[in-house]
Length: 181
Image (cartoon, rainbow, N blue to C red):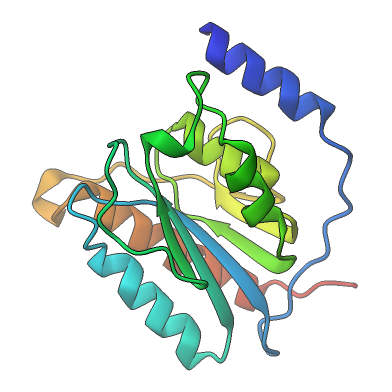
């Protein structure tokens, strides 16, 4: 574990304890989707996920990350892609990014990150959400964890297939699990 990861783990432990509140998908929710953007910032799979959530009458905000300095996509109230310049040398988001992220409270955060990525882990940690769902990457940020099966290159672009699969699985479980809340 390098120094950046150790600092992240330390900051994660310092976060106040949360009491997760299970989301009920049969009513409109304010949702945050965080994802790894493709280098060209097209994100076709993410756009189709957004359309699915809008059909379900959800209020959706999307935050992506791509490891490059110049971002071509405009910052919009409901959609934003972050790049290397939005983070410090430790991989931690700059204060204005954290302030913008925490300016909204969400009922549900879905993390479509499919591999360990420190900038995405920070976004998931700092997001103000009642319930957080994502892939089991071993850090203890999420309230609901899923494991990803091995996918083969023949199934298409791996990151796209994984994000779509992960979204489908999270929505399936959230729909079928009943909460005692």
